[in-house]
Length: 337
Image (spheres, rainbow, N blue to C red):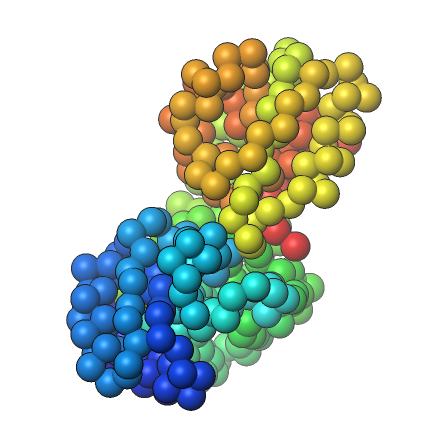
């Protein structure tokens, strides 16, 4: 089924429902494809006996499965559209992850990036939406005299060559085998994470717009480090910290939060523990004693949403810098292991 600039195999949903005799399905979609939800619902309900409920809440990835909602509506199965599963992720409710494939120009995007690549050995990286085109991307590189290298990620990564915003272990696994990385996808966050984690040149090629980025990634990385160091510096004088633990199944890092709490308390700082599903900028207004927040939830919260908060929001790695355990020259984006 085609939905906008993407396509997916709706038959796997239908077959799973029929095979398991499921009667009530909770359908979860990212905001970008919610507009197509009712077409999908109609297709499922016409070909099965199931009733489909559509989640209106945001969906940020395979880490963000609406288990509590599914329990409340008595769903037999959750269908999350748009993401590959996290292999080591165990869920209490049957959940089917259905990837969507971008209708884009991946091969042409790789060709456009050729002149920007450094060295012959190229680490090839992409996201779930383009992963099925990885063999064609490899072939294009080979035809142009390069040696593509595709890495294998950790237990949170479903496919070789795949990177997440919160997990670039695929890139790290081949860091010493490549001269540079080519990321095929949209946006800059994944590329920034790779650049900060590997210190190898990262070239971005957008298969939708065919835009190529290289120097821009290095420039943005340096700006990011300076900006984040500014927040760390402000937080140096903070005496009261709030550590946020996410209730999203794939983002909950309670043990890490406890370790951070112990470190801060040893330094004489006061610590409060906050639990949240959504991390909103009104936290400092609600808890005015807190002078600095530490997010153990999605690593992107502290980076992307920082300007919306009236106090610093630091990552676990930034706490290491604040406490002198790590130098700013070894700055990395937070990742979920």
